[in-house]
Length: 236
Image (cartoon, rainbow, N blue to C red; front, side):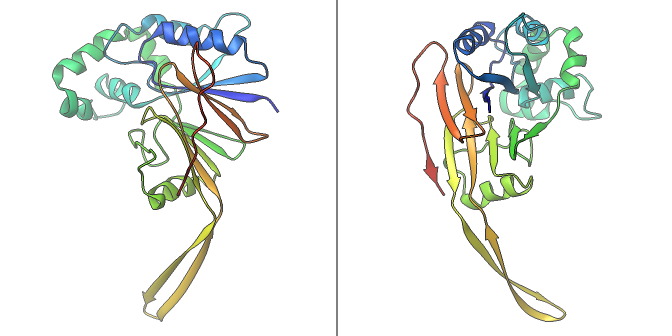
């Protein structure tokens, strides 16, 4: 079975994307490229990168893209989210950031961005920018095990790949059980639910990307143009 490449957080950086594509051309058996959102941002003009994503070159991996937090903010401000606007961006970074984001993306790309999906489910794996809860849900090594379990269990998958935090990590939720007491009109009842082994994986951002082999469950954290980084694993 071939492997996946997972990237996110390019935020208009065409050079970073080109560096990752150059890496992937030298990597055998990588046949699918997933882009988990945040391909745009207010720091730079994003149109060249958006054009490259929509028009891949011959012989290179065609990106399978999702929308991220920055895309969601832009689409909300442009009227693609009903009455919603980019209020989260305004509150966190101010009106100037909203204006910069609007200037960074030509209107001709809005239709393509609006068609991007929230997430993918592939081979018992969920691939999302944030999590099953929301696009802005930032999961990381410091997140509580119960929160991580909730996010994975909502989708009934064994692997959740997330990009919102921008960090590279692998957290394993070891098998166990959840016990609860339920009181209703019929009295008090004891319930026990088994928890299978599941994982939450942060794929990184920018030039930091991840290679995953679904067949062997091997995970490699990489940086474009550099050697393999030490793989990280955590337990919860």
